[in-house]
Length: 407
Image 1: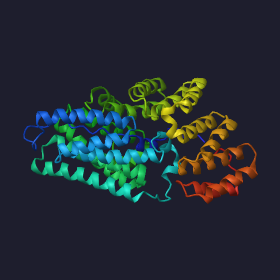
Image 2: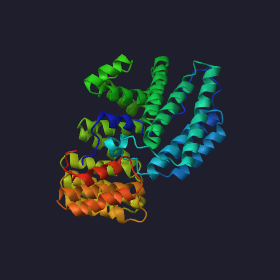
Image 3: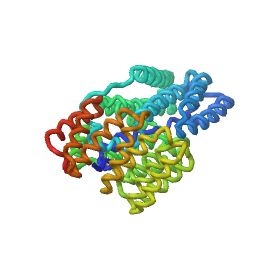
Image 4: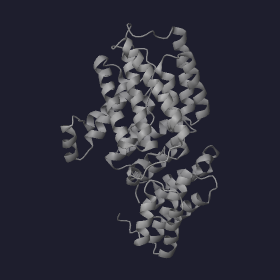
């Protein structure tokens, strides 16, 4: 039942979390009309305030400030791109998909179809299409506009992110991701010190470089090449020298360091971001998991208990309990894990998706404890609810034969 970040396919989703979207001051003079000094100063102030709210999960405030950017710079892709990002990440938060462990679970990649809120989908696609159109319009005026090319790549990156994490359309996500990397490589070729572009490029290089050898060879035949060590260095450049994407690069590096078992490096970054954005639940959850990875179980468990008592995190109490239960189960504390999974199912405000998955996990744990009839009841509850990833298929499988933990 270990669903922490382990497989390369998981990282293909992690790198698209929270792409940086800068309004750079480094565009060539012959580009489309640039903001005035006053506009630039206002934009920088709005962006800082907006992304402070965004990273602290205050999406309402962030949206208002992003909309103000659109009003101040209506012909620039930045505001529309930020609005699209806010819709995308807000939906991930609502559906409890901000945690990276979701994307290392093979069930996430199952071909079961996905119901996307049509209003969310329409709003996201309208904003992202506007961003793409604005960037392309600038490139039509001047193909050498490095800023416009950066934004075009960033827009395709966010579109890939949405397709993968919300719509779960993985082939579409791959197509858009390759377009994003292609555009950002052109940016670096044109302007080598544009280190913000290394966020996309570095993540791509790491992911492709992490593939099994036989897959890597097949990918090379299609022109897809990467290098794991180079990717990490590129991401480190973005984290250390990026004007706007440094924190975004740190998020990606946390996942990569954890996968590479460089837990202390991951902990350092997590704690930095935890202190910088105290209202964001993502970072303390990751910290708790990492503490257990480095052998400090009591501290990791205590961190989860502290989160459950923290008023700032009450709205995501279902996710915290689910993650805590998952960690306890991974460490062999099955009875304690059952307790917290059951709390998720009993919460009136819990995410329906997490409730379904909690019933599935309860059934699996009961099977491992030899309580077969109780496990059967849980699997039947899963089948009575809306399918989440491949939860119905798993429940049907374990109704036929008990879960053994070896799957």
